[in-house]
Image 1 (spheres, one colour):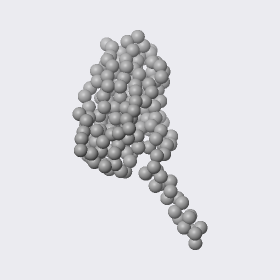
Image 2: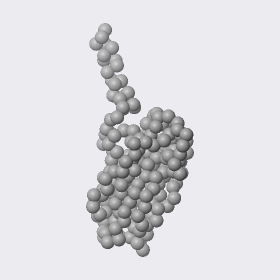
Image 3: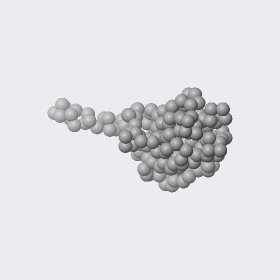
Image 4: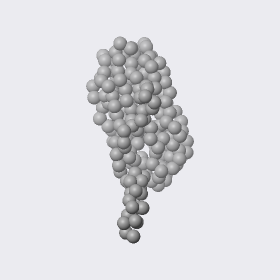
Length: 199
């Protein structure tokens, strides 16, 4: 009898662990045949499906193509404890050729990107697509290392631990290399409603 119960309940352990404990994401699915979301020197708009957030970002640089990058993103569902998104919006535009720092307002999480290329500065402007989950608040926030490690390199940033979310980024722009380095703002989210919001 004990062996039968063990066989019944043992498969439930990974499911419960995956929903409630820290675990590492598996390989990311960047879409069909790992296609890029843009072509060089063109704008793009990428949004995760409803209830999902960005968990991985990949990019390759090409100086011959206007010092531009190809981009690809992977999404995963937010933890069940966050519930469904209560609202989503586009944040303010971050201008091309400048350094900037931005987090999603209203305690939102990054669920997409929009970008337009500007040949006059050989750079892109950026906008975050953000979604808020009830009145959950960020905590234990930190900045990732720089992606890419050096200007002109390929970039592959992944969230390795469940329950950590991208809330924004800070970037530097090199006028010499005509490329941008990113540090992503990563946070955990409370499992309860909180009374405050960031602006």
